[in-house]
Image (cartoon, rainbow, N blue to C red; front, side):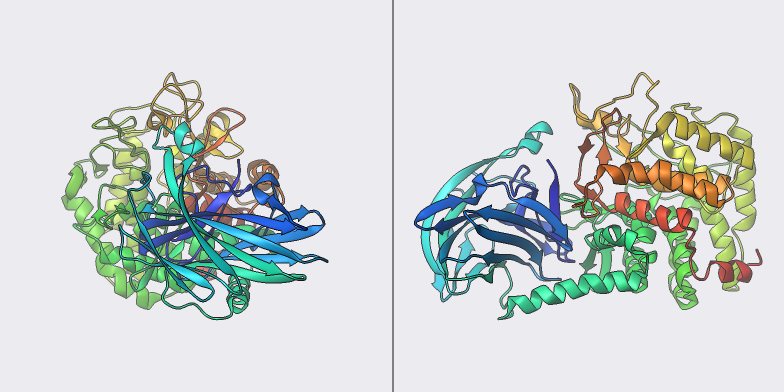
Length: 620
């Protein structure tokens, strides 16, 4: 069942199904980020609507409204000649959800709105009676004060009558049950709002944790529409990109006085690797350059011993550093930012961070990350993007010298050599890059996934040997890798994480095994489509015919699956086997970002504005 989401730039969101149902514990109309973009708190589970037409009450849950998406999700109902349009949106950077009702009727009716309330961290579930809710009434609404948190929910509906009820209802979450997660929850119906409607009109039901809300919600609605339109105007891309551009906005969030990227909805916070992989598609091709700069500065401020944080935990916002690739992606993303902005003052601002990363990797840092005697990077298990862990067991440990880490290391050294040239600093990187390249090519006599362990598992990680700006392998090997990846791993939703001819391959994410076993052993990841397309176009010399081929064969089949009401969201993962059911998060930052980036940069060949200038400065 398809799902929709709207967000507010804080990590808060509203999300239900196309039928307005709750099928996950993460679903609700107001899930508020209390320490942006983390500590997400379930506040409003849903609101159930009834209309009274000529003394007969119709429950809209029995009328599965038609879902439409046009900037915001809406639901269209037609009951006894009364037409109702229900639209959900949030106010930017406010923990407020608006439900806009547009009624077309030629006879007087009344509407009854029954909110279902909760108060819990969105990972948890609630037992009936475990939380109490104090109600204080005011004109046009009610204040709800839960006993387990120092927050007050205001529910407002102008010109309505509120009647308290106070009873618990059990929720069963089918998607969580499928995932073997906690799936029985309880929400409380605190009361009903009654509104008399004499003729066609519109009104707003408001859920907020804010102290103050503007008196005219229609102005907020128009302002939010205009904010979305301004994002499209700033991106200045053809209209065919609009849904993906709007979708990227869901992930950009405030973090202290800067910006970050939520890795995915519903349950991810801001992750270093995900933010950096996503950054070009989220903030560069869309021309949100100041946001990109703030993201880089924010993660740079948290560097530790040459490491960029892997993640900030949702419950306590604590930074963890268990990643070997995030820091190397950081260097590349500074380089991509400069291609788009030519902001050399920023280069001076982050130079110490860039240098500290190389220094940390050369001399050794945490998690046994260090440059070995062969000038390649060695690391402990579970530090690459294939990092899932079950207890103390890593299904895809990939320790020692994972292939994409070597690709990122060489790319980072080459980038640093070029940036040193630009900023008139000592180039202590280029010679090291050549040593790493020579050493790698001596050892990469077959297409290994992990170099020194001679691991021949056929995975997509070797594609980064081709897709990154600076490749240390020859053109013939680049072509072979692209061809082999296309043949063994390509699906219309992305690349499989393991070849189907491997005995460990899992064709479905859910089965008679722990789902984390399948996570990187066959499951399809859409974000990998980006580097694959970049690599494919690269080995085809960016020729127009091959770029057209790439769109028709790599992107269009996926777009064709999404119907006209698609909001630009792309799932985190899909099953490896056809029909490739969607799994995981309903929308993932790097899925959306890399599909958009590869379409813009690689297929449409819309290059960064200052790329040629940057290359000229470094003498290329």
